[in-house]
Length: 471
Image (cartoon, rainbow, N blue to C red; front, side):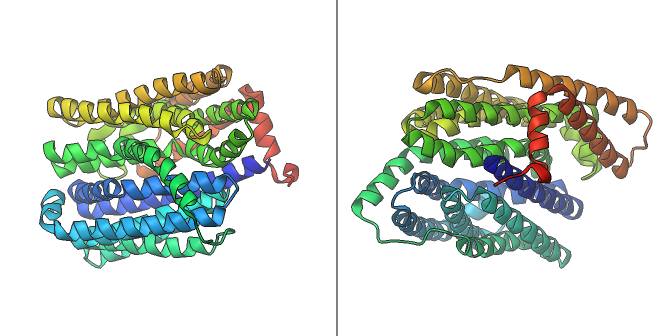
């Protein structure tokens, strides 16, 4: 039950992150409109691309620390490498400040440099905590950072600082959360040797492309859209992406929880247990995403209207992005397992195919079909990762046991939920409160139906009740 509790705590904290993100996006959209939100999204997209080297080091720290030996030494190497990365990138941003400002559409190069430093610190701390199997704590830390960021940003927006306030609030919250995270460490830094530097670098040299894959999936469409469509459409697109990503929260929590466990099992070559955990991860990957797709098909425009009426233009985009996010969530489980069993070289090749195809598809489809092309490119790229990840994992440790029966239960419960929501949507008012009520009712119907249909989900739910939780 330890893994179940860890996943539950991490998921609960991510719900807090999502609620804070919703509040921030809502405030930005309401006050600055789709155009202001789009400009901020371009700046953040640039930030995530500039932090690719630091993210690769963070992933390597997670892997090496999770293996259980010389953890303090790997911790030291990771912090030193990322400190050098942060300084180098920040100086580069300042040196090419004019080009950065032209691309973003505002004079923000100095603030973007500060964002990079804060984000590198956060990436390193999160990687170190995950490697120490403190996944629940990282979830809470992210939640604290996101809530703090939202409060700071909203306050600065209301004071009239607009884009500057958004970036300052973002940078300060990241730096503060990173400092707080250090106090959660169980491992203390130790003097490293060349062996530690070499082993960390060996993993990082493969994981950097995995980082690019993650960044490409989340931000390549935004980067390319900035060249072809107005910022208002980018703002609507980002709202749709945020809603779609919310449905992958459970999958993300499961993945984060299982990675250090799989890593440790791979050292022992206990692949039967690895298969069991992969199956568990796949069961809960679709728990939110599948009903979310059905729900968006019924009340997607109403959800987007909460931000502003202009956002309803993204209803079709929302559906395609939910499909993309769902496919990517399943593929991520396979890739995470491949990395956990210490085969970053295999994941590297998959990620290389993904990145190349993602870039080509985004440029080609966006230039022809605008923002619809961006959504389609994202979905096609996710499909590529899912297929390649499945066959690669099969070749390494045998065919994964895909829980088709459980997925069928999720589809069945989603259909029941869809019928209930569709019937209610035709009679309830069109207010924002009524829309939120529809979401809650739909979630309750889905959850109750799934518990009835799935013995496995029912047993997990009962086992997680306080009276049944044991150490």
